Structures are given as C-alpha cells and as structure tokens.
Amino acid sequence: MALRATLRSKCGVSSLLSRLSSCSSHGRVCVSPVLVAQRRNNSTSPKLKVDFNQSTGVAVMHMQNPPVNSLSLGFLTEFCIAVEKLEMDKSCRGLILTSSQPKVFSAGLDIMDMYGKSPEHCAEFWRAVQEMWLKLYSSNMVTIAAINGSSPAGGCLMSLTCDYRIMADNPRYSIGLNETQLGIVAPFWFKDTMINTVGHRTTEMALELGLLYSSSDALKIGLVDQLVPEDQVLTTATKTVTKWLAIPDHARQITKSMMRKPTIDKLTSNREADIQFFVNFITKDSIQKSLGMYLEMLKKRKS
Amino acid sequence: MALRATLKNKSILSGLLSRLSSCSSHGRVCVSPVLVAQRRNNSTSPKLKVDFNQSTGVAVMHMQNPPVNSLSLGFLTEFCIAMEKLEMDKSCRGLILTSSQPKVFSAGLDIMDMYGKKLEQYEEFWRAVQEMWLKLYSSNMVTIAAINGSSPAGGCLMSLSCDYRIMADNPRYSIGFNETQFGIVVPVWCKEAMTTIVGHRNTELTLELGLLYNPSDALKIGLVDQLVPEDQVLATATKTMTKWLAIPDHARRITKSMMRKPTIDKIMSIREADMQQYISFISKDSTQKMLGTYLEMLKKKRG
Image 1 (spheres, each protein chain N blue to C red):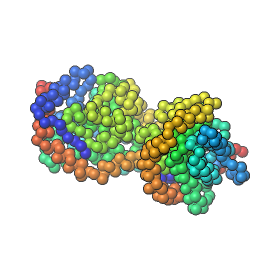
Image 2 (image 1 turned 120 degrees about the vertical axis):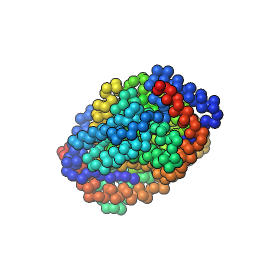
Image 3 (image 1 turned 45 degrees about the vertical axis):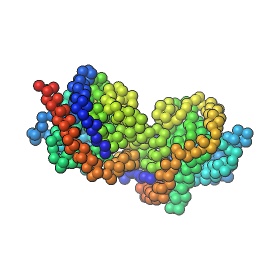
Image 4 (image 1 turned 30 degrees about the vertical axis):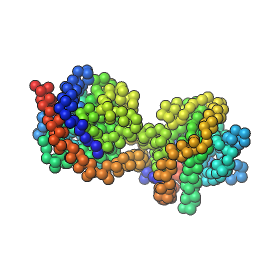
C-alpha cells in the first residue's frame, strides 16, 4: 500500500487548505473530498437500509449515514455485516447500492477514525476498509452502483467494485480518486481496481493529478457505464440488474471470479503488511497535524 | 479452465433450449452459437484450402468445413498441421485466415467431439483446441483474420489470436463470446487473450453477459480493427499484409514475442490443470445430458 503524505512544511499545508476551502467555488458540490469529518452519529439508528425483494431476488442497499455517507468504522462494520448476510442468502442474487443522502453517493473515508486515534484503532479501521472492498469486489451477486450524487475517493472506490455503474447526469456531481490533492496516496488495491476499469494510462493521470471527473467525463473514460436523469438512476439500475440476472448464475459467477481473482489475491496475500503501512503513515506527526488543520478548516466553514 | 454446466433441473434446461431455438428470430445469422453439431464429414476432402503465393510470401488459408466451419478434432488437427508446415517454410512470412462458408467465419467448437466420447477422446480434443490457439497466438508469421461471416465463441478465439482483424461490415454478422448464456464458461486463456485486446473492463462485461457484438460495436470496443464491405475483406487483408511485411521480420518477430510471451507463459503453466478441468466438466452426466438434449433439438430443427 502507499498512503503517504507529502506535507513537510507549513506552506504546503496552507496551500492545501486554501485549495480545500476554495473547492466549493468551482460550482460543483464539494463534499470535503477524501476525508470527511462528520459529527459522530452515535445513535443506534441504522446507517444502511436494505430492501430485499424476495420475488426478484434483488436487494437495494440505501446508504443513510448523514450528512454525507462517510465511511466510518461503524458504517463499514454495518456494511460488511449486511453484505455478508445477503451473500449467504441463496435467494439474493443481485445488489443495488445507492444513497439516501442528497447530492452525495459517499464522500469517502471518515477522518474522525484516523485523527487522534490509537494505532490499534487505526488498524481496526483500515481492516474494515479492506473488508468492504474485498466483500464487494468478490461478491457473487450482481452488484450495481446507482450513483445518485458526488462520489470522491472512498465513494468512488465502492462504485468501482460493482459490476456496473449508473450515474446521475448532473454536472454538479463529480467522481474520482482525488487523494493526491490532499497529499495522500490511494492504496495499491484502489489503483488496481481503477486500472481494471479504465486502463493504465487513464489511471496514472487520474491518480497523479487526483482528478474528480464530471459525470459526462466519467462516462467518456469509462469510469461509469451509463448516465441517466437523476430521477431515473434507481429504475435504470433495476432494469439493468434484471438483464444481468438472465445469465445463468453459476456461469456468470465463475466468470466473474476468473476475472477478479488475480487482483483480489494481491491484497489477501498482503493484508497485514498493508495495514501496518497505513498505521505507520497515518500516525505520523506530520499527517496528524495536517488532519487536525483540515478539521479546523471544516469547523470554520460550518460556523 | 472453468467449463461447467449449471443445468440442474429440467426447467433451466428448457429455458436454455427455448433461448437456443429462438435465436434465429433476432434477425441475425444464428449459427447455433457456441456449440455446433454438424453431420460428421468423414470424407477425406480437405477442411482447409491453403493458397501460398511464393513471390509475396503470403499464404491464404480458407476454412472449408461445411456447413459452418465448426472446430472439430479433424479440422483442428488439419489446421495445426497446416500451420506448422507454413511456420517451418522460411519463405512464408504472412498468413491470412478466412472462410469459404457463406455467412460464417467459424461457429466454434464441434459438439460432436464433446458428446458421448471416452475420456481419452475428450483429452485429445481439448489438446487440439489448446494447440490451435497456441500455434496461432505464438506464430512468427504476420497473421490476419479476414472475418467474412459470424464468429461466435471458438471462431472469435481464432480471430483474436491473429495480429489484425478485418471484418465484413454486415449488421447480420456477430462476434463475441456467448458461453455464459448457455451456462458454460470460457477457459482462462480465452480471458487472458481477450483482456490484452479489449482491456479488463470490456472482457469482464463481454464474458459475464455472454455478449455477441455486431461488427460496428465490435469495432467500437476494439474487438476488430477494421470494417470493410464484405466483398473487400480479402483484398483489404492482402493490402494490410503488405504493410506489415514491410517491417523487417526479425525486429517484428522479437517484438511480437516480447508482447505475447507473458500470456503464453501463463497459459503454459496452467495447461495441464486446464485440461483436467475440461475433462471433468465435459464428462459429467449433467453436461452430457445437456449436450444430448441440445443435439435432439438441432435434429428436430433440421427435420
């Protein structure tokens, strides 16, 4: 894995922060890309709503972790449990992933699980991020991302793991792996998933420049498969899953596994090292400092 | 490899059969996709016609195994012998592969070599299939597929092995890998070869959904390189060949080998495992039953 910070000096950090505070001026919904710090939702209200249609065999998973579906340890844990439950249910053949939060699919990893936390907590968190990717990417179900909002970083990753991506045709929404813009680096398995989807060249540019694509540019490069009006995203996903489910399950699943096994093996054979790498990186003083300043800036923005 | 049947009960089987019998209603030339059962051509008439032009150093191989150039053990054996002969002839620098059968390039593997045979015969057949691909894919000659008809499954594999693909611009023709629609899965080396040509994403979509593309969609994704009117396919192949042969042989061959060696090595290392998987799949009662029922249906269609 390769999460690293480049921030070594104050001026690096402040230019970073000014870039972050200006991002809402681009006319696009800017949901604090990459790292989100949301008031910790300590309530026991579920962060996911799963509607399972027994007759079609399709489950729709609505992410409802306000305000921006940040991928916190709590959310990821709930998510993995829900996916596993559906995976083990033989009558569940398809999964549509979507958001209940306006304008956002998911804004990415929750900064609060990385700031001021013990190494043990950071390790637990990163394990949960890996688990989310593994469960989704290797799922036997047909998985469709119904991307009804912006989807930077971790949100983009979630959608990339699915078999098919449908996005709302709204120029204010964006999607991409923008980690480098904040001085950090997407882990190698984010990179692998993206290469499998858009190819090496596009991934190299997208990751180095930390690009967030508008929905139409995302379609052009194949980051998403289809654009539809926002109010048709879910119905289109439902039609699409029906088409996929017409293929004999066994054949489709073996084919999917054959396609994805090499990529999955690369992480499963390196999981602990990947976690150690993340913990060593995220607990560095310089990184913690930059996360802290980022949080300060968010607080100021809110007030 | 992962050829497996999913047919576990009658209702799935009849769904499969109705899909097969209705396939000619799509307005496209449907040549019993994937599996072809042709009246066994036991005559000693050659299944290939090779025209070798000594002065240009180009051989044109016309597949003439009526009705649909199915890849039978006999055909594949003749093919491999012909390939080897041309390969060893130092004056032969280029090979154009085309079909003498109307509307079809090749309809894929011959079901008669997969049904009601002894284990040794299944092994012999699959070895011939593997050998065909290896000889084509690793050929030192410039190889051009002049695709003058539909080319599902095995036919698609043959054309993918060539350096360049020219297809007739006829919307009634199709090309792709439709195995999953019949509950079977392409071998892993098919997946590897296709990925090198159209990329991971398109391969994943094509193989999981069992897609057959019309010529213009095939061109769009890069499955074929050029579309021309049907009566110009062979002439275009000849012109293209001249262009490729203008490159100094030695440099071109080393480059081709450099490009293809990783894939070839990967396949060679799993060749025996792939063989065992095929034999255990094809000899299963459920697979044999499915093939038998399919043959019955074809007989009824003819009678």
